[in-house]
Length: 490
View 1 (cartoon, helix red, strand yellow):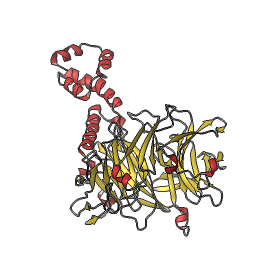
View 2 (cartoon, rainbow, N blue to C red):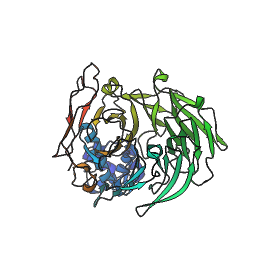
View 3 (cartoon, one colour):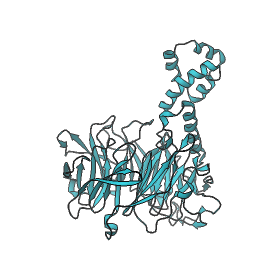
View 4 (cartoon, rainbow, N blue to C red):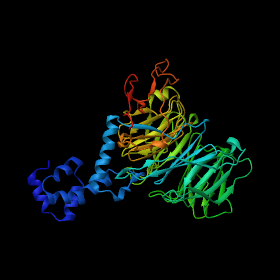
């Protein structure tokens, strides 16, 4: 308990001793302590709040200015708002851009300056504009760039975009027909760089890159994994086949990981293969991680680590699986089974796969379902107290990709991109998504087609009306499905 007398005693301590003591105080105690007097207030702000932010870190990709430039008190207040909104089930939801004419399997990549969407054979580049004051950046109207050659149809669709530098101005685009191309984005235009071609008939299914952008990995329908360097135009540095030519459903490169030896990870039917990397190449004796108790019934469709900074240990591997579950493996452990599992019981009963997963906020994860455009959210400290959101845009589609940050989730379904915000930015006029980058408002009521766990059709409506952009959510722990609405976007 912090009292005025306690505060007076603490005021006499040198900075190094006070700093050590402040790390044991929670936020309420820190805020109470700073009210003792002006001098102690300044020391709490300069010594206590930065330590609190480290212990309760959130990774903000689209903050303006960058989070390192924020005053500790302001950043603590923003992070607290996000946590309070998640607890209270308060969020804003907005579609980004118009609805696409044809269904596709899109890709999504978020950088501090751009939102990159691979939509069929086109690359849509949404600039992220600075907010006039401190706050989250705003998504601007997209500029389209045709990547696939005319006449190639869906055979040359974009299957992945991987940034090569932190600001996202250089990236690699992979296409289903085996084309791999680096680009630099300058003055709203694309400048092509190195180009590679896989063997004829090799359809590429996954693309991933290291966090430093010095290594890229692709996998094909024939089960061939290829490793490329962006600076080497001669083709893959190395290629090898997966066991029994299995298809890779997901992949991840960890060559500069904070706590792991260099390795590559591939999600295949029944588990996750981890291949160590030595100075001479890939060591072809992988360690296999398992998912469900019956591995033959599921596959991991997405693999991801926490982004920096984070409260999570960097070795916690999050994955999304066909059997409706999200799973976390701790790679520090010799155990090949997951340490944590998460599922929306209603989506599980409806046999909805989890197609994608991401970390966001402080202790939260999210997964995109294969039906009804649903995003499921979990606090990993309370796995059974999750909830789900029907994303903007109406009747059901898979959520093919998600990328989370502090208080925002970015995602794509087969016909649209969307943003879910828990930081309040959707309630600011022209906030989150600029007016000219929003979809036209419509009055649509759709009923998801599916089955409840106890039988019968899902009979609730997912509501979007003309007066506001509103979508619905429901808690997993309730016996029935009781819908609640998002906040109306400004």
